[in-house]
Length: 117
Image (tube, rainbow, N blue to C red):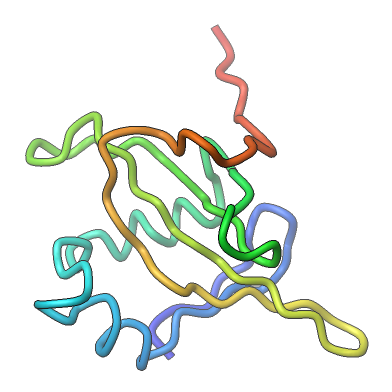
């Protein structure tokens, strides 16, 4: 296990070694550009700026924050979490992480953090 953290609703979320190494960091089919963003991935799960419903899987949600580092500044870090319900509990599993230029166009926005001014 690479990461285990509770999301903003206190549901445990897991990033497995298999997903990290074989899916995310795969240089051809993955998203190796997310490797230096592990702390931001954790923070996005705990304190997202946006949450969208996945259009591909009703069990999945997209947790999103704005990236603040120079190379990807103003891009969005998208953490896709699939929630699996057992008999008495729910666990989230990170299925992928990516960097996007825009917020999802066709997904339903479920939540947005309000910024206090």
